[in-house]
Amino acid sequence: MSSVQKAEKSAVLMKAFNNACDAMRISGADKSNMLGVNASTLSRNSIKGFSPDSKTGELQLHFIRLYRSLFAIAGGDNEFMYHWYSTNNAALNGVPAVLCLSIEGLFRTNQYLDAMRGKV
Image 1 (cartoon, helix red, strand yellow):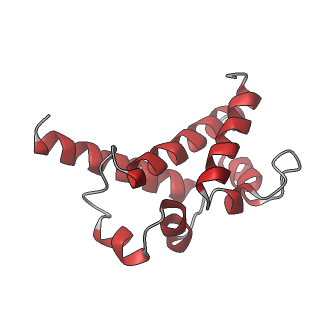
Image 2: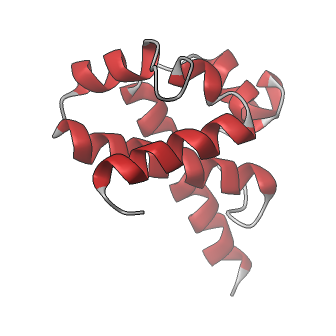
């Protein structure tokens, strides 16, 4: 794969991640915490993005997966999606927005949404 194709994939991934975060009203600080990078690194890479093969890129992909699952469950209702993401969930034993700041929490939330969609 050429470096141009890799750069395009990185940029597309970053744009999709930012769009999902914007729809979920996630702050820049929470985005950087979720990805495990500091705010200046996230800002510097806001156009070119991170390689999908990197740890940061994989975390972006997992969050996009979460967004798409929640979008399917909510029928695209952004208000419901934001409400679900930002309030306590008894099954997850926490607030998804807080849980997703850790890798384990992001994965658990994805597993929960997969189960809710019947994809287990």
